[in-house]
Amino acid sequence: MSKSNIVVPEAKEALERFKMEAASEVGVNLKQGYNGDITARQAGSVGGQMVKKMIESYEKGLK
Image (tube, rainbow, N blue to C red):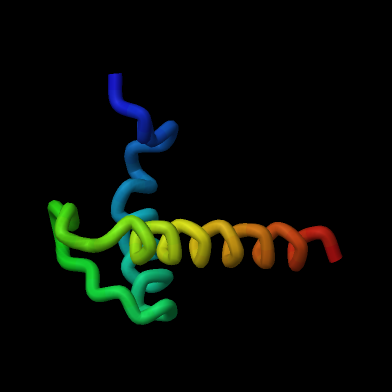
């Protein structure tokens, strides 16, 4: 079983765009498909940026 199961399959494309946007913001060059050639630090910075943006969005929704 995959660790990254998407609960709403229709959201897959939006998540991909979100990931690419976050990568661009932190200066990581991602390509479509496999990105096993990036460093753990780069991957972590993309994931961290995604979480940061999700938290910001949630906090805006609380106001």
